[in-house]
Image (cartoon, rainbow, N blue to C red; front, side, top):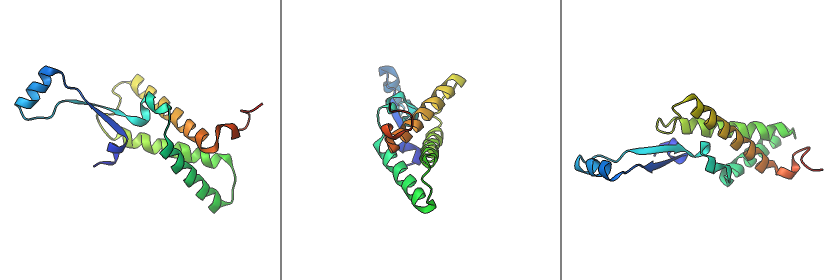
Length: 130
């Protein structure tokens, strides 16, 4: 199992004719991959990433003695970047157009910011409460 397999959804494309041809040639049907961190469905939740980011942030705060909210933001962006890089290492999950890259990158950034918000508690962010 490759590292990218944990972050990529693979859906089989199996039209009847293509499936019959693949079976007759003893080959696997064609698949279409989508990176889970750049899929709009991931905007809903990702509790494991939140727990990992919180743990890493708390360790860094404990080691450094700094209580800056930037530590959590940097950790969330780093984890988001790592997941994005792992996802894009799968050739089938990579966007093929500039617009696809822009959308995938934007969704990854939004997910990273949501990871940060979930990690620190949305109500704890300065300026969000009246």
